[in-house]
Image (cartoon, rainbow, N blue to C red; front, side, top):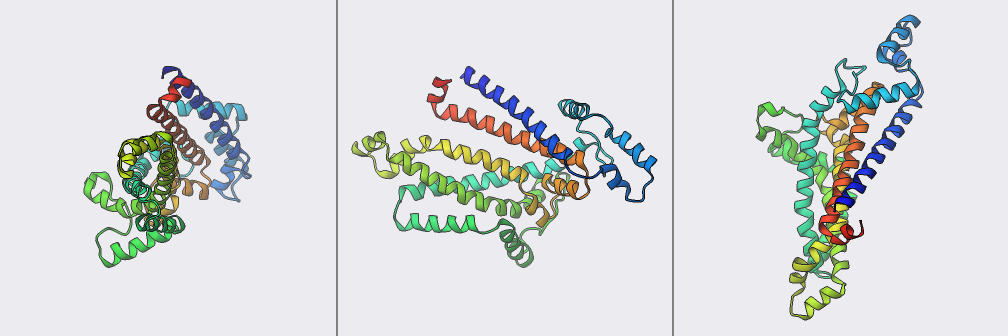
Length: 315
């Protein structure tokens, strides 16, 4: 297990280095000068030059890359061109919304999808299975922003059970904030739960075709008992892969939902940084999100080894 973990750590480090190079290169090739954009077309040349010097835009590419990476390693993501505050402060404030929203949506999708997928697999070809497949197909097809607006119309405007948008802040109490995050979490969880349920069903059905499952059935176990006692754990590897990808997607890809519900999260911060050409915010937040994706995949690899001892033996 130690060798396997060390090999995954080396892969993690290399992935982070490559990701930082790619993100820095992509930001650098964007046409236009951030200083000129900030000051406007009529700004004097000496004013633009002074701002470029203040923002550290006059160094070579290598100097700027090393300064950016070195700062991130020390927790210094630079200063926002637009907000004139440290980017780390902006990220910390927005993560108080994005991370709870992501976890909330992932818990909802997982708690729905895994039992639904198991039930569908246990009842393959019957009415329950057909209903699950039809419902999940619709869940995948429905755009989450449209579903979000329907939720607002029903539960916020008509029933008034939940707020239609905004985030009061954790200092206002946990209950108010959970209510504010419930509708966006449901809107995010619907398509993810549908995908995960279908993957769970397919993985369990594939496992049920193995010889050891047939042996268990021959010893008198019912199909449901075989699913719960033997097939479930062995079917978890593809499910863990999807869970890792879903966490990354929910953390980085909730920009539309955050705008629908006026949530001040990381996705909305990236959108604002792009529209305001605040490149230091964009590259720092994108690097943070990419790093989160890589770290989550690393944890998923470790979960593979915990579920399947054969991976530890091959390491």
